[in-house]
Image (cartoon, rainbow, N blue to C red; front, top):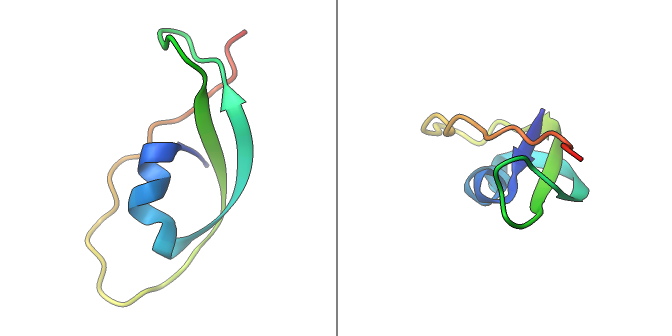
Amino acid sequence: MIIDETTYERVKPYVTVEPQGRVDLKGKAEPVACFKVLEWHEAGAVAPAPEPQLCENHV
């Protein structure tokens, strides 16, 4: 799963990620930082994470 920086900031206590760099996205003026989720961690009772915004490389 690939998530954007905003989503990563919300879930970072619960995930291990691999940065994917900044990606040009269709409809975005600036490149978006993306992260590949490698692992989810149990961290007790956690509110559901927001639906991640998927990042695809649109060149």
